[in-house]
Length: 455
Image: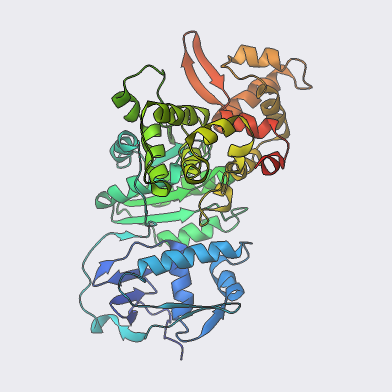
């Protein structure tokens, strides 16, 4: 029997300790809002409309993602997030059933109520931020900057290369800033290939124009910068209380945009620093935390700590790369892992099984970034990757002098590579200098498939 989920504003679906408001797109547990991603909430609505029925995976994907092509792993990830939000495994209650080769079904008892028949709902900010399962390391100062700027700036873009932790940092800041906004909306654009329906999705998410303080977190904008810039400018003019926090590998270059670049984690600059000072560096702290999750007896004598420092340096302090490397300690050991860093192996280190496809490995992360480059930018990056040290803009032009690019194209390409976070911009004694991260250089210089054969 299908649950009644008509468009009436007072329809409420109750199961266990939960109440789902389809019109408001809100899930409550004991009158408190449940933090849940928009995709997981869409899946809940599809399943709860037909309690007791098994719905095919393709049918669920079609209803939730529409014409967007997504892999089944995306559905599994959001089903897992939905189960966590419903407390499955903690409370003993079970709501989502999985029938192999068939699909998923809602197995809880669903009762259709009217708003007037329910208990008064406690006023709380509307929010659909994803639930973070792990804490952040080394981002406290940056999050404080975000918290200071968010209420004052209407468009703030957090920029950084892939794997730097833009999403988790932005989610944590938005979570802490919830008390300053009546509503907080989250939208991940990584599975949207062309942004054709972005305007419609945002209009449906935000509803009627309002002056109430609202925070919109747009995640992974880099492949849709033009569409995002246009949509954000339109929304900011329409919703006077709206503030937008975007994450991207390059600036959106929208009107009124403020930028905050996400730096790498801190790595010890010298080998002769006191042990306490080395262990206080955020890159080392992250490595140790993740390594001890797979190797609880990890020793931290000076030789082991030096190996950790060498690994973090080679990985440029990039959090995703450090986490992947740390999880190899249980099977490789520190010394063996450090020895493999000069090979293509780091590009193929596995990430979390539930991570987005672009973060399943460092190679996948760079595939995503490299695919956003123009032909001239790809050519410049390949040529510049031959230089390991820092270089100035003039040196870059000199290095590329023999290429088929005109000087003005070289200037533009170098600027774009820096904008897109594939060139690190550093302050040197003589002014600004550029450097290609070690992992990016390894990616550009190694042929496709080299990492797989090395592993």
